[in-house]
Length: 414
Image (cartoon, rainbow, N blue to C red; front, top):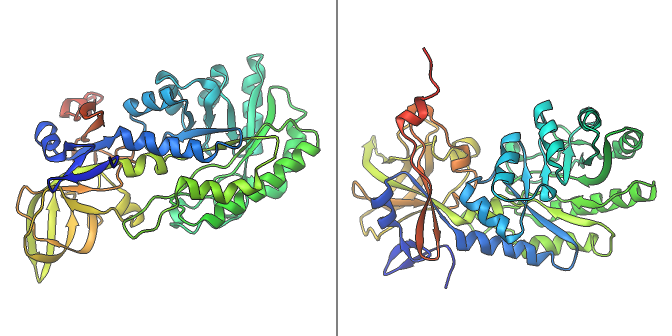
């Protein structure tokens, strides 16, 4: 059986559970995730790298639902975290500290201290100054922190400029040409042991060559550093593997591995990969109801009860999320913008799309919303964040209840 979202008797379901039933029970907007699809995607990455020592470190920023994290932990997944909060969540959900890497360009002293105390697998250090801060924190505790250096190889990920991170003008990492001198100086410091190199050149990458080039650069650098006498243990390839947008463009886990492994096989290093979107993205939808269809000066607008506060990616990145009716419509075809109720012109999901003219109350599923959907949701316009449902073995589990006005305002003070 297909895992994820498919039709039964013409109605869209999540692993056989009708989405219309979920909307009736839990309301809309509503995030729905397929655990079977998430597990399948994680296992595909794990199998794709099976012929080299490796660890799949799920990038938590994509979707940090505890229900998902606990199940990934049971599969043996590692975690890529980018904040102290994500570190606490990963450990709380059962991911061992020695399977956690800590990324991010601006770690606070409190976050560094917490990660040192936890004994994580590695910091992905973004600068020489960060290495100094990690060394100070670890030495003060009589500990030695494990550190990988994030390098910037000046490789174009060929994705949206806001999610490109590997070019020389981006804020991330250090010039790859400076790595040897930074390693040499760090070797003299108490409190740190430099054990790896890492690069992450961007997100939503659907072309293999930039990732293959990154792997070649990292393999060459790690080999050179090992020859210099550094105890290199792993190469961290980062993440950024894209998913399809409905146009047929996608880089599969197998295609990704085929592109990068030729540079890595036979090396005495463990390989870390950090896919997040590619695991969770296709496994989720955002359900929304049609409030009404507005026509003005020949322009049609399908207005939904979900808005940019629920799913900001179209407004922020011009991201394309496929939209389909949960139940067949059969109405007259119209060209329309599918928009939300938020007081912003940027509050849209698709523009100038052809679809059946929907009835009020019709249920739509916005696809590829399992990553950077709820994780980036906000309370803009005093709107309350939706519930999250995880479907597992034919059962709908409430992963997170719908936010209430009292939840949102309980931190307010006069």
